[in-house]
Length: 482
Image 1 (tube, rainbow, N blue to C red):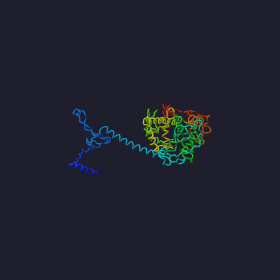
Image 2 (tube, rainbow, N blue to C red; image 1 turned 90 degrees about the horizontal axis):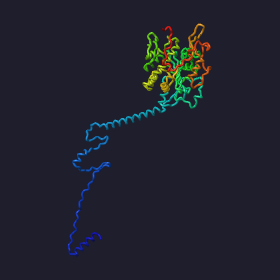
Image 3 (cartoon, rainbow, N blue to C red; image 1 turned 60 degrees about the horizontal axis):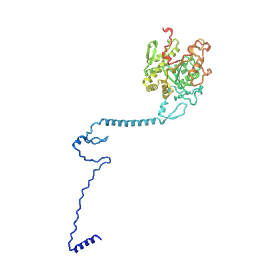
Image 4 (cartoon, one colour; image 1 turned 60 degrees about the vertical axis):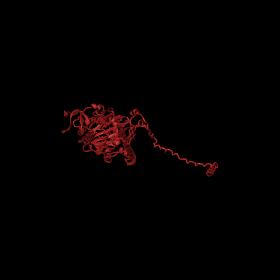
């Protein structure tokens, strides 16, 4: 039944009852209260609740504070208020962290660039290779152009394979001819830069933690190695074989006569010694008696006397008043060597190795020395020398005696004739720790005094440690001095 039929039936029913029917009252719509939409609250934000509290509770509850983020300015404070201590410390810490991060990044980039093989390195007798900037700097030889490179030695090295076997290493990576040792020839020139009046052979026994220094008197006769009529050792540099370099002449002479392989050399002039000594602040020494190098060049007596550059030059060159002339000068020079090494040790102790390296850099920069050693090689030797004990540093002199070398019946020169057998014994004891003993026939030493007719053998054993030289006094002077 649909809606019309239902209405019709209702009307008919009402009519049948003769009773008028009231129309259905229209229902009025009940208005509902408007739905209250709650204010949106953030995910982590608690809704605001109105809690009524008594006056007593209000006194105990502190005034509500509004939260502000770490980097958010408070609306309750002026914008220009200073940060509190914690905020200030945090801000500084953030800045430091950022700066440190940037610096570390820059350092990493620089390190990467320095270690990239981008430069070509070339050394005489070796193939070219590509190396990093850092390696190139380490191998840099800033003064090699003065004297040049050394040739391969022509002598037999005769390495003692019972000691130097495949597993043997001295722990110091140097370009060595014989593993375990590194030998440097030191030459000091006169004013003309021709005569080598100072000749020292410095052998670093790296595996043994020792240093042996052999002093070669400048008057040693080297008949086959110089065309100078004096035949003296100090003339080999300028008067030697014209087919080879000056430095190679002296190196060959040393290797052929003394059997000591030379790995490197250092040369310097008397006026360069002045600059080097002044650079390090002088050399403290005990001067037993006044030394008068010339009338206006005097070193006063004292203990100690801080020798400046000029005085140091006078000290190592002075010989006129010594009873034994040049031998007296050689003996006095070893005292200077000890004092100089003591100065180096004090620099490392008081100022650090960085200061020592800065001195080496200045010496290189000003070319006060000439050497075939790289900056890295010289630094390694300086490190090795800085930890040596004075008992482990020994200096000795080539055995021999004064003699006359006659050119003809009337003309002769005073020379120093080497005692060959005593020299070979000394070399085998101190200067061949990793080589087989040197044989008499393997040395080119020429004697001018027969070994059965020696006048004296006072210089056959002059070895002394730097510890023993601590109390050494000046050589004896001639009677004319007193």
